[in-house]
Image: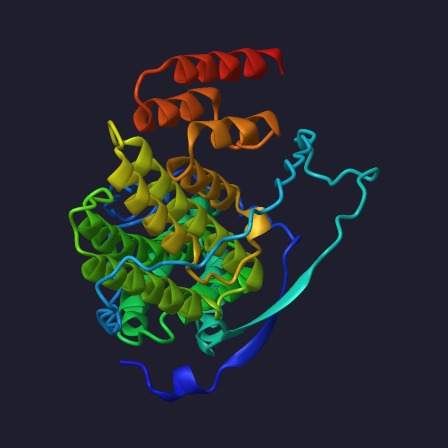
Length: 366
């Protein structure tokens, strides 16, 4: 058991984000200690290790009415990201003399004192290699994977019991990798973070499933409560994430919110026919979701804009939808998605057929 002082006397570290890890000395491949890999619907490559949650979110119940009257402003069209292709790295052992130095961004984060202690053990182990015949050097080196994995298995249980500071282990492994660059350390720190994210995702999925695919038969009182609980889960999750390096924090922050908005959008598209009463309900529900408070720039969230457009369409007359379409709105909805929504919302008519034909012709001409 770790002394409490380990979690109290934290140290500030500096991390240069652009620095690449040096390759470890060549060694023959060896089997890694087995760890099961569960399925992950959110696209994270994680391991099935549970992280204790603080407690179930609790919020006061709201009035049982559908008086959501806050309006959302339309967000400007996000700019497409430009992705440059990286040149293939040289296979030479020496770095290229012509390469341009990559700008380095220094960020700080906190760790315990454990990385230095583990690094001493690693160095002590490596120092014994010189006493072995050369043909055993690679095997000796490969055994470090087991040593590092053993440390992780033991120490991770200690960190998990401290829910407010459990992500300090991710920081510790980040710093340990700066001291002793081994690929296994990188694998374990990403595994630990992925497990943490997986628990959050499961919690969100469990609460969102209570809305039963955005079923209007659920009372407004219960619906408000579920959405407020989801807000609390996000808030608690992001608060705990603040301890990790800022670049990783931002990456997870935006990815989690984008995934959640996409989950809501898919619930709308999963519906068949949407009548007038259900369209009014959906507008209120989607507006409520768009009002959730997240510490992000919404202009950088493509699914936030997409969800705004879906909310507008489900609550508008066909003429208003087409007027917006002619004004180059709905850029984040594909042709099939836009037509599918119109098909779900409106009964067959000449106006509907002409509108769908116009959408196809204009989109195909672009």
